Image (tube, rainbow, N blue to C red):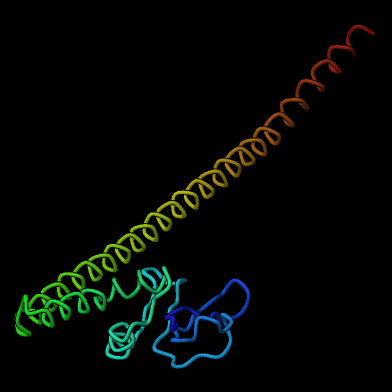
Amino acid sequence: MVKIRLARRGRKKLAMYDVVVADARAPRDGKFIEKIGTYNPLTNPATIDIKDDRAFHWVMNGAQPSDTVKAMLSYRGILMKKHLQIGVIKGALTQEQADAKLTAWVDSKDAKVLAKRETLAETKQAAAKARREAETKVKEARAEAIRQKAKVAEEAAVAAAAPAPAAAEGEAAPAESAEPQA
């Protein structure tokens, strides 16, 4: 039996996968018949690069996709294409009708993906702006705190300088009054 499945590559915690057609008895990262694409789950949305014509060929010839690959093929419209092609073979639709349905479906799917990417980009920009504003507020608060400390230190220096002459006058007065008593 032939399977369409993922073969892992990449280093620890940075996995990438090859989408391969392999014998079901072959090990996960072992011998395969054909590499038909790649899958990177680390990007948002996940990057799926599959040769659609080769994947469609293998699916139509009976290759069984794994659960993950089945979800990817569905996402790319290959399983929809298979479904429509079976309808054409049975005579339920014409090839032109099937192609029109597939094109409409692919266009709507591409619009959804594009909208998601734009939303993610806007969210990222908004988060960066909020982060910059928060940093500005913290910076201003620190600057104000430094100004307050400088003001308090300046007032303390002025206060320390002003009582020194007053204290000298206070000490001198009792000394003068002490002389007449004696």
